[in-house]
Each structure stands twice: as structure tokens, then as C-alpha cells.
Length: 77
Image 1 (cartoon, rainbow, N blue to C red):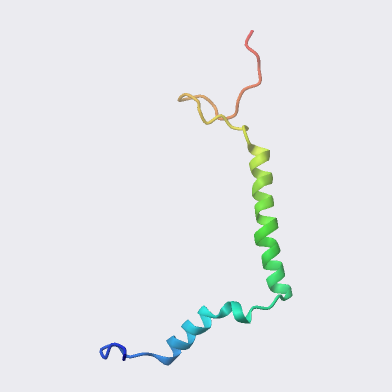
Image 2: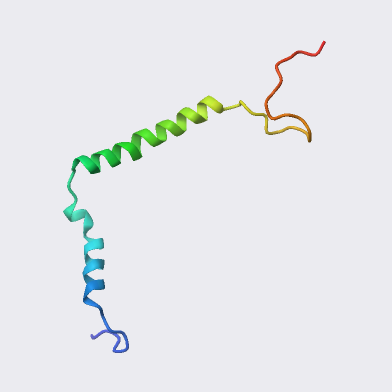
């Protein structure tokens, strides 16, 4: 069965699509891909976890109008 006669196929686009669909077949572990994987899988989540644990409960987002975000540590007398 032939394709649509109103659509003209571009060989460059067809090659690009084939390359994109079969990229996993030509994958190689190189220094660059290892560095990208380590940064994306270990470093970035580690930094996000560190910042989330460091600043957890630092700010009080449930305050009334005019109250500061930082909780006060002074005891009322």
C-alpha cells in the first residue's frame, strides 16, 4: 500500500527520524555520558535533598497578615 500521494516525503527527515528511534542501539558509555548520568542521578537529587532538609520548617508559611515569616524564638513574659 502506497503512502498519501499529497504528502511528499523528505529523505533527510526520514533519516533523522530513523536515527532518533534507533539511538539506543548506538549508545556508548563515554566520559561525557558518565558525567551527565552522575550529575543527573546523584548530584542534583542530592543537592535538592540537602536543601530541602536544611530549610525544612525554617519558615512559617501559615501566618497572619503582618507577621514575619521567620518564627520568633523570644518567649513572652
